[in-house]
Amino acid sequence: MAEENMREMLRYFDKIHKIKTVSLLIIGFICIAERVRSQDVLSRTQIFHAIEWQSPAMAGIQNNMSADIMYRQALNGYGSNSGYIQAGFFYPIQKIKGNNASNSSFAISNSNKAAEFYNSKRARRKQGVGLQLNSMRLGPLDRTEIKGFYAYHLPVNARFNLSLGSAIKFQQNIIDYNNLNVRDKANDDLYQRLINTNSGRQSNVQLDLSMAYYSNKLYLSFVTNSIISHSFRESEMSAYMNDGMNFSLMAGYKWALNSELSLLPNVEINYFTTTGEQYKSSLRLKYKELIYIGMGMHHQLKWAGLFGVNVPGNFFINYSYDYYTGFIQEYSNGVHEVSLSFLFKNINSSTPYTW
Image (cartoon, rainbow, N blue to C red; front, side):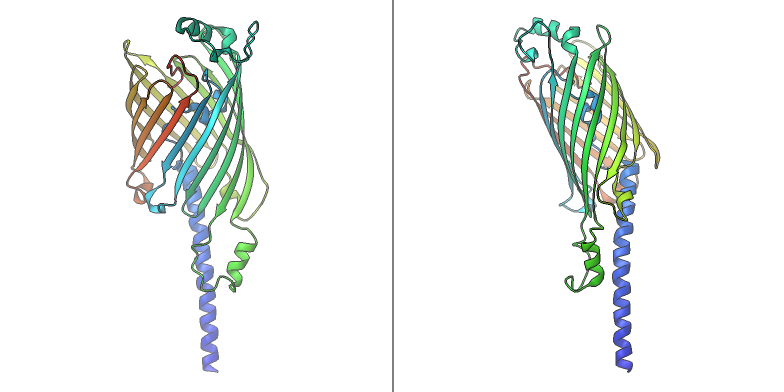
């Protein structure tokens, strides 16, 4: 009898231990999700470089099709399997009256005529489309996204344009239970319930809307992220996996110091409906269209060193190194981010919209 009671007690404590482990895993994930949402840990540092990725109204802003890929190292404390990858392209759709070419900006080889054409109102009235793929892994969270962009650009006067844009994003989130310490996964009822009920899987679709006012030297953009969000597969963790609605105001300016040097300040202010506001800023010194250096900051979270080079004309390399100063510092002693971009048929080796 005593031996049977002892076995029963051990089974009871083993069950309590497993429930505690699962609970801690879930609570840990919730904390990570809340912190990622509130502190924007995984956001791209060099947002000014690929502004169309941040504001749908900027889709197709370049005069040429552009492609971009970015890799961001994950926080060190989450292991080598963690990381953040973005890839995509944007394309300007131009329909010019009186011209047989559907996109005549690709056909101009004379630099003076090209400059005159690009600055005309008829060339600036265009549409832009884009497609973006995102893959992110942070600890137990594995996220995959596909995002489509559309924007319409309308010239306001000789210098400024107004654009309206939208983006639809399909997102799938998975929580990995494989690292859960279970003696017999095949016969453990609690573990099998977690797996079979798909409590760690969730899919949703989200809609972003934005508008922008810009010229060759200045931009101002307002974005409403996740204004509509719908989950296809609900679970007890759905509320923690969805991106919360937030509002973003971005601005940048290109100040020509002389014929060779430009100073480029940028700022972004975000307001999250769940956690309040945050802001980021950066300042870069650029030599011609060839190279820049600078620094950035994310309030109460990190500082960043910035570097970029044009090699030569069509190909662009951007690099940043983040040093965390906020609570996340205990998980990371620094994060690297690198992006590679390509402008197709960039005959004049111009980078008009890098602010």
